[in-house]
Length: 144
Image 1 (cartoon, rainbow, N blue to C red):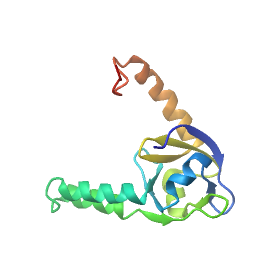
Image 2 (cartoon, rainbow, N blue to C red):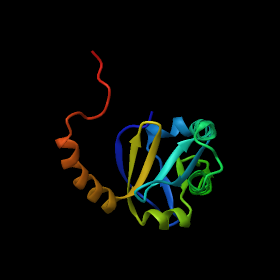
Image 3 (cartoon, one colour):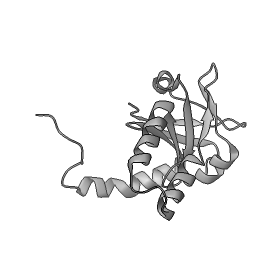
Image 4 (cartoon, one colour):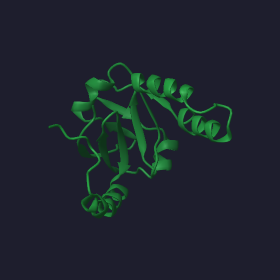
């Protein structure tokens, strides 16, 4: 499970040192891909396999929406392998898509993590905080 958020920096080669707590979880392989709201998603290979199975069991695969979803999701995936320092290289195309330049935030979101431009994350979080605070429930199951 990926949790927490971490303010980090990309180096001049587009490398990002993953949070130490995430490194063990991605040791068996990972992908990064375009995420919604213009961020980059990081997924374990096991999670990618789960998503593939789930996509196959969804509505007919031969619809325009299903083809678009598969193309934009699986088509944007890049397999990455952390180096000995725990760094991954984010390709220029994904950095451009998410507006990643130097200061970034890595946000744990349960089965994935997201990489956001720091300013974009700050704006998103500020906008969503009021919505979250006004919700009747946080949407998470509670334990009795």
